Length: 320
Image (cartoon, rainbow, N blue to C red; front, side, top):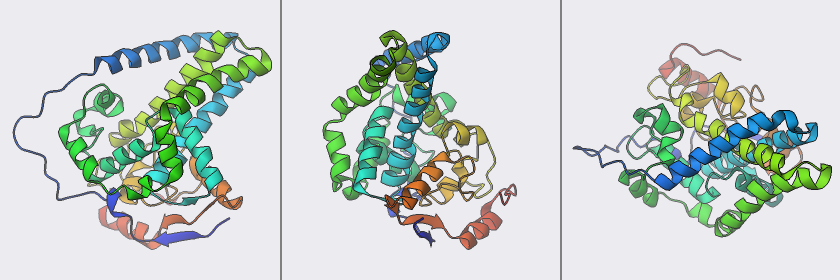
């Protein structure tokens, strides 16, 4: 396994900007994007229908749906989030291609846009400039932010971020250039065709279970990090910020629910101090390190974590 790098600093673009002040006066009117409302409603109805089809699906189809779920989730957690948003470790070209394909299957915006919005989220968390500002309520933080036009401050701050590292990476920009095609193939065609082609599953069942239902479950697992993990749970590292430690979110989002830790130490590749505990993404990255496909994993120094717990924690910290 590659060497880990305990550090005490992070890159500037994911550090909370305390100098930002929300504009005084009335907020801009909420502009609903009805197209997104209709599409999101149809997606969730399709996923619900897929649940009723589960008894008619073969075991192989259900297993395939789980494989697609984990694969696409890693495209967000290990890819867009820990690798490209926070640069918390380095990945070889084969691993970057693997994660880009997984990210396209997840269909949550291309890597460049996802990482840009996530850096804005960290830099201006719980303010008007936060794309999914949790102070606007659970529904907005969970899915509502995708159903309305962005607040002008989100757009303004996003344009001012330093994103040269993303623009310089060929895998990221290639995926961005061909994103629509990659989504059609990876999110919809591959999950549907494989069960039909290899074990004679009906296209109907294959479309609604490993495609629509799987896609919707991964979406909601990701959204829970923005909503539930910003509202419910303890704050053992920093009581002054909203993000919480939420075990349910940790389980459903394969390791992303240690959210108070993550916002306190955003550069840590594990987003947690507990290694593989409820953290499939960390297990995956460590495995890639063992195989020589990943390296230079950044970690918060143990002494720094303990000092932060004592200084700003809520007293709920446990050693494991």
